[in-house]
Structures are given as C-alpha cells and as structure tokens.
Length: 325
Ligand code: PEP
Ligand code: MG
Image 1 (cartoon, rainbow, N blue to C red):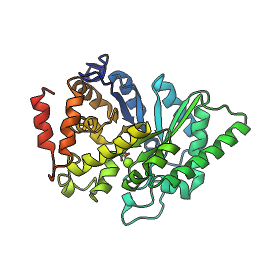
Image 2: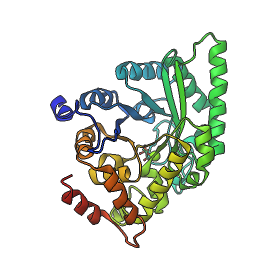
Image 3: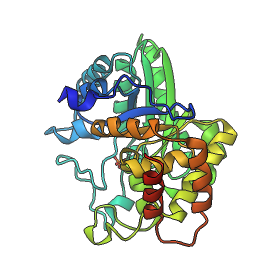
C-alpha cells in the first residue's frame, strides 16, 4: 500500500513554469493521517471531525475528544492539521443525536447552524481542541458559514473558551488560525469582510456546487446533469480567487473536485494553489501539476469561462491531451 501512495512523493509539486502547489489530504480516520505521510502531502487540509463522532454510541465527552485530537496532532507530526468543527445533520447523521427531521436536510439544520443554536455542544468541542493544542499549532474552521456574522459568533464562542482555558491554567496554542468554509454561495458576496475576519478560507466544492446548481450531490438522477467543469462554475471560482488575490487571502479547495485530475487542472487555472483531496489522489495530481504550464492554462481558462456552453469538460480534456498532461 505504501508504494502505491508513495511513487512520486519526493518530487516537488511544482508546475513546469515554477509555481508551487500545496497538496494536502482530506481525513476523517487516523488511517488517513498515515496515508498523508505515505503520499508526501504537506498537511491535512480538512479533518472531518464528525467521522469519529459517527462511529461512537454516545456523544464523546471533552476528555475523550481531547485525547482523540491529541492523537491526530501527534500522528500528523510536523504536518499542519485543519480541524473542521462538527458538520452533523444533512448527509451526516449521528445515530444517538436526533434533532428534528428536516424536509431538506442538506439545506436544513446542520453544521454551524446547530453549533450556534446549541452552543454547549460546539463549546465542548472547542474546549477539547484548546486542551489538545497547548503549545501546538491549532488550525480550526467552521463549516457551512452562510454570512460573516456566523463566523463572528463562532469566533466569540472560541474566545470565551480560550478565556476559560487560560483561567483554568491552560496554555495557549503556539499558533492559532481560524477559518471558514465557503460552501454556501451567499458567502461569496461578502468576501472582503470574510477575508478580514478569517485567517484562511477553504472552499468545499461538494456542498458549494450542489447549492450553486440547486442539485442534490447524492441524487443519481442529477449526477451527470450539471458539471463543475462548466462556464458558470469556473467563472465563479475565478471570481472568488481574483478577490482572494486582491486581498492577499489564503483560499484552499477541499471538495472532491480537487482530487480529480481534470477538475484540479481547472481549479489551478482559476487560481487555486492549495488543494486538499483523498490521499489516494495526491500522486496523480502531483504528476498532473508537474506537466503543466500554468501561465498558458490560465489564458486558456479565461476564454472558457465566458462561453455559453453547458460544459467545457471535453474542451479541457482536449487541452490536457494536446499538452501531454
Ligand atoms: C464540501 O462540501 O466540499 C466538503 C469538503 O465538506 P463535506 O464533503 O464534508 O460536506
Ligand atoms: Mg461540505
């Protein structure tokens, strides 16, 4: 297995014209962290913390959570870990925590919405992160932020937990970074304020594009109907990245598209330089990056995003073949 993940791990993930791309992994199990080492990823770009909650029989208390996050950080060694606070509800149900059934669960009471409405649950998780991260680097992000005020409220909870942690004799993290996930299209219309109030942003293309196209990500009838490799979707990504560049803000891409070569190619052409994906994808994405002339690709994408087409997938495939990618 190690060889399967490691075949190009020591080669730089750098384009032919010299742009470095940070490759990170999405994780939810401890196994994913050892695979992050195997494939030579720079870090864990998304740690889905609901996964360890989903496999338990009851809601884990603060000491149990602390021990778990501590293990994650220890196993990750020098690789930064971006923990995402609980994203339950929607497609991720906790068997021991009911809530009320929603008619449209993915657009319902989930993720940060539950966190802000039931702050005791989120505060316990924040408390555990702070305990596990004493004198360590803590990167934390909140899922399904729909407008900046939700991030502000979540940060206020974190500040209160930090105060309490220090009063109880705890130490601060060596470094603390707080981010938001861009998964709800509305947030893209508040980017300047978002960049001001966050240390980083991570774009979750799975949720973002299901809302963008009003198309359930799990519905097989719709699976081929809308394409992230379409002018509107790429135009959206380009617009977000242009604003990020203007503000000097850091945005990564952590949805599934980052792990598919053609989609990752398009994301790079739209300006992304940090991609987080399943560990098994890192090798092939590194190979794709190393065969890329980015300046030329960016020009090519500029023309694609204004086409009146349904999809530009075949056009991009042709580009990749023509350029030996
Ligand atoms: C996403 O929505 O793209 C994302 C990374 O989060 P999840 O897949 O866990 O909903
Ligand atoms: Mg999501």
